[in-house]
Amino acid sequence: MAIDNINTTDNLNAGRVKLNEAIDQANTVQDQLDTIVIASGTSDAETIQARGGEALLYNRLDKVDTQLAQIPQQINDAVEPKAGKVYVDQQIANVASGSPKGSYETLTDLETAFPTGTTGIYVVTADGEWYYWNDPSWVSGGVYQTTQWLNTTTTQNEVWSVI
Image (cartoon, rainbow, N blue to C red; front, top):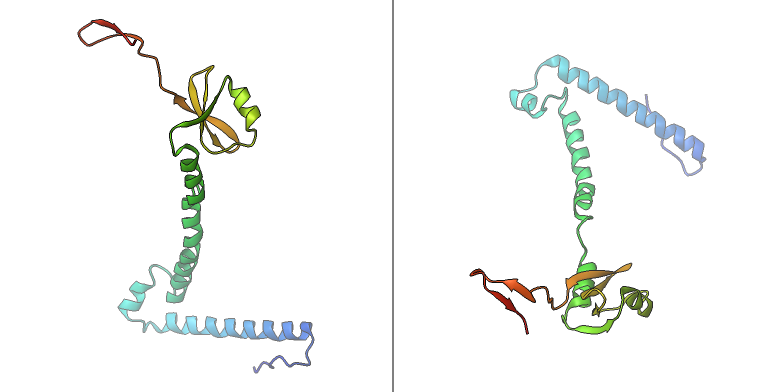
């Protein structure tokens, strides 16, 4: 059965009807070809093996195409949790020099001075720790120039003090 082409004078519905008829006819022809290939038993062993368990080779190829189409999203999903270059560069800039830009009595004082953050590190004297901005908050980088070894014992059990 011949199907009419879509004409420039056809409205959208007439064009849709013609497209659907063409798709239905193509599916019918494909079904007939599938039946002929399966029924004839003339497929060679290599083609049968290439089907990978599918009834027809194109079914397997369609499945592989679908899997390949999903790979970019799988890569994005795997990479997304990792830190981006801009984030890493910002973090390095925040602590790059290693020298404090200033000191504050408490963390609250630091947060009041820079509520939206700034680059560099700042020492809080109340806890002796250095802080850097990691949006949206100030984060402790640990004890700054620790004095935790003021009184300790050496491996020979000799007491010593830092003066």
